[in-house]
Image (cartoon, rainbow, N blue to C red; front, side, top):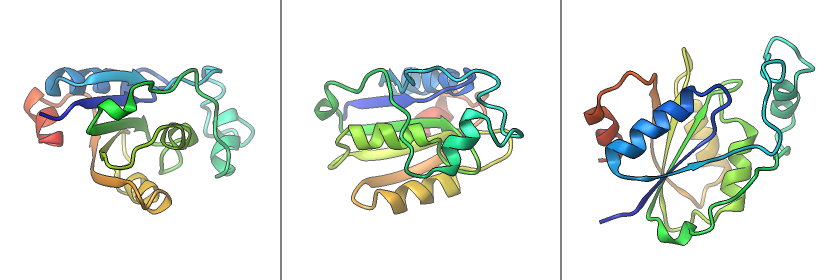
Length: 155
């Protein structure tokens, strides 16, 4: 049986809630991708071109530092990465997570939380940026899915 890690970045708590439900449904371990400097409401104001998140997303090379990395990544066969969609793609902190953890020889699934944007662009962007990683599947969740839907995501 595969060992599964459900990793997530959540700025407002929505993605955290979905990650917890997925981890529970599939019996996976949970890991928060946590920035050293938490995002404030002002940081997340996408209407402000000078907000922290706007500036970070304009610089594709930016990698926000994280508090910790997965110490036992080799123990996992499947990695689930969850995040909110920012500017139609993954927040740059997801690149930090991917680049600080060896995901080669793993099956990687992504899920996004978004009120309107799908997962497709995020999935394609990550797959194109990290072409040596086996990105298997993606999905958008709203947090109201059934346990079966969470299980089918990895199933």
